[in-house]
Length: 130
Image 1 (cartoon, helix red, strand yellow):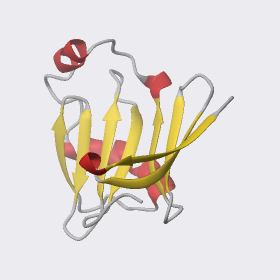
Image 2 (spheres, rainbow, N blue to C red):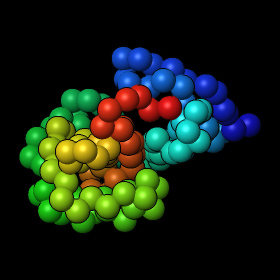
Image 3 (cartoon, helix red, strand yellow):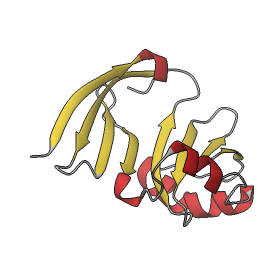
């Protein structure tokens, strides 16, 4: 059966979110328990590396430039978080892209070896995901 649970992690700036996942743990969605807003979505079925070492090796050189990362991530960010990435800065560490803009929420997104984004999360500029 699909799972649902309440999740709290002050270390990760998460107050209270509901976690919903499918039976095979291939998809997971986090929704703020207080706001009812989507805070994270992922499809682990898209992950195509097997270890942290392999991930670091594969992504030693960034897959996307800043501009291409924004182009690739924008449709899903707009769909799930109703947020336009225009004017955002981009930083990258391994396969994780962080999109930031002063006064706006931060978006973190992860890609697989093919450049497909498989996980997105949003963090308010100030405050907790809830």
